[in-house]
Image (tube, rainbow, N blue to C red; front, side):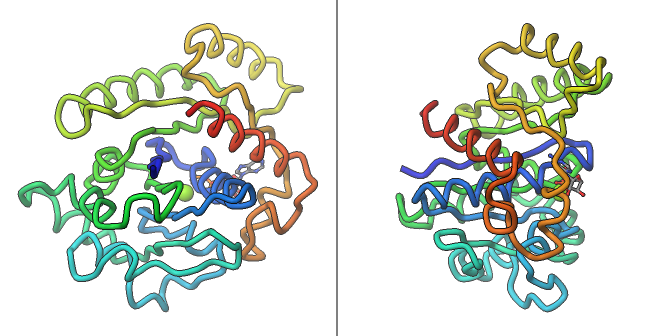
Length: 253
Ligand SMILES: Nc1ncnc2c1ncn2[C@@H]1O[C@H](COP(=O)(O)OP(=O)(O)O)[C@@H](O)[C@H]1O
Ligand SMILES: [Mg+2]
């Protein structure tokens, strides 16, 4: 069984890419075989594994257009068991080109359906900070949507938006979509953060991951070295918390 997870929030800078990379690396550390899919034209996930988007001849775009298979455009990363389907800027145009074509929301799902069932234990999809064709493809392909969120005043607003979005996706293209919320970049010294975390815990209950990811500068540094946190700083708090998240995810299934 392959579990497909989309990591999305229409806001930038909430740790979508960091979560995708770190969670993927922790799952593979636990012996899982993982495919990361970069669906963001900014290609930060691709960059954070030391690949140069400008030098990529084949990207997820080719798979979405049907010129190549997802396996055909995937690459092995420096982490054993962690493969990446890279992105580059070309995805900006693709987002518009695909829109309106029959079944345009199903391109990624169809690509994933062509991969042998069980070849990967997990597929993690990093989404752009917008709700275009690319994000709709990710949500249509996913079993689970992870919404990373910072405990700031707009958190409730963002969540309301997403809960409506999930409802719409369930009706239109993916009735099985579930969602869970992940608190990221948490600073426990900040009183407002503590108050909002409390509200989220009460309001969301089981839809909120118990694991909370706190601020850790090592998480900020690791992409510069083309490595996930499990390689760059395996003993830090950031690494420990993403391992806990991976374990919570496995236990939940
Ligand atoms: N737990 C954390 N502690 C400190 N910095 C973090 C943490 N998570 C992410 N960051 C940093 O915050 C910035 C935005 O994160 P990123 O994953 O790129 O967000 P997104 O993909 O949502 O735009 C990056 O510089 C990243 O390194
Ligand atoms: Mg990102």
